[in-house]
Structure formats: structure tokens, C-alpha cells
Image (cartoon, helix red, strand yellow):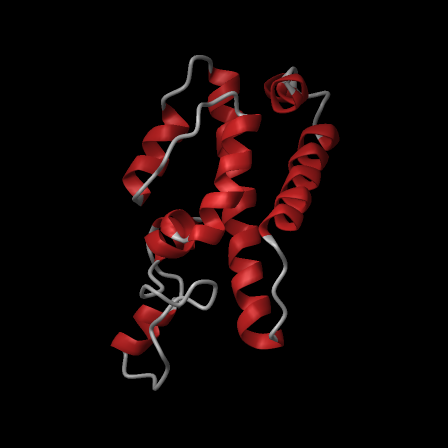
Length: 146
């Protein structure tokens, strides 16, 4: 996650700016250059995934357009537990979208966003379950499932 946070991922737009002979366009929806903000927040594919995450985090359908807004969304919560859940969810979402992007580029396999969200849902539940005895993780499953 820190690599994404510092905008150091080798996105297509970054690679093209370094002189690598590739198209800078997003492999998921090739209408826009693949930048960090586009890939994780603006792309139609990512928007479908985030929509489900917002529902799970008891949030109305929010549109986050840039990385600063994502960080603000994580920090701005009614409770510390919800903020913690948002951190977990954001890390899992970023990981899965990057994995799907690489899967499409390297293996030419595209997995629909609802199936990717199902994997995200499973991972978040597993993270919470594995640490359920720790104080910070208590009640997170109830929030995620509500």
C-alpha cells in the first residue's frame, strides 16, 4: 500500500513517461491514461468495486476522485472502528485491483468486478477473523456485514 500511497507503482503512464514503448492507456478501460488515481479510483471497473465497499462501510455512494480524497475518506469516520475498517478495506481493494490489472496485462484474463469484490469481501472477513481476539478488531465483522 505504501508504494501506491507514494505513487511509485509502475503504471502504464509512468512507464511510458520513462520511455518504455507501451500504450499509456488503462488496460481495464482504455479510454484514459493509467495513472494511480485513474486505475484505483476513477476507472469504471474500480468504481464498481468501490461501490460495494462503500455499502459495506455503511457509506452512501461516494465518488472519490483522487488519492487525497481516499485518505480523507478513510480518516473521516463516525468511529475509530469504522476508520480502522476503512483502512483494511482500502488496502485490500488496492491490492486486488492491482492484481486484476496485472492479470489482464500478463495473462489476458479479465475477471468481472463483482467477482473481484467477492474476493475482497472474503479477504476482509479473513483479516478480521484471524485477529478477532485483538481489541481493535472487535465488532469490525458486525460493521462489515451490516
